[in-house]
Amino acid sequence: MAATETIFQLEPPLAVLTFNRPEARNAMTWAMYDALVEACDRVEGDEAVGVLVLRGAGGKAFAAGTDISQFQRFQTPQDGVTYEQHIADVLDRLERVTKPTIAQIEGVAVGAGCAIAVTCDLRVATPESTFGIPIARTLGNCVTGAAFSRLVDLAGPGRTKDMLFTGRLVPAEEAHEVGLVDRLVPAGEIEKAVRELALQIASNAPLTVRATKEMTRRLLAKRRLTSPEARDLIEMCYGSADFREGVAAFLAKRAPKWTGR
Image (tube, rainbow, N blue to C red; front, top):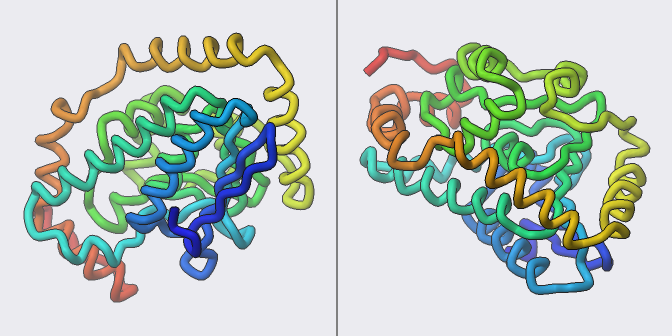
């Protein structure tokens, strides 16, 4: 596990994984994605763990997407397909872990950070938190079919298109109203509130909790886009001049100049 970029703590019946790059708003590196999968594997095999909590260090971000500097190595549309498939696999592992998962959200949960939060079973956030996948105004890339499907399941098709068309970040109150957030808690109380919720869940019949989670997953999976069904759209975006411009502009901290090519 990426010891400096993530912190994994066992506090039976809870396990806590902290994304630990506060200086970068906890932007996800490849190693951090690997650590998330490893955390899922560890709690899966530990009967003492009843709930897995994900959170970000520093109080200002849950996770601010993927570290964009890593995209500079992309050369072909296949690089984008490979990346999105890897993210899809990581999120699928998170979704399939048999223990309930709670995203403890302070600050921004954007891009892949939003996708991770949406994949968790429950989301508890502070009123100052914001959510979104602002790629239409930043990178010009495309999310996986599964990630898009999860967002539609929670927010609905209209709200999802609103978020992605505009690239805006949704404030916590609105996110709570539309179902992206399950509970809003003041910043000074969120750690206590998440712990109390997690302990309440962990004290209940584990097989009932597991069955509830898996039945929900199976139901939603029946109406989900598969990776092959979205491949042409991912190739279109990641193979474009606009994507290369988006990455360059993001790293240069300037506005991108879109051409539609």
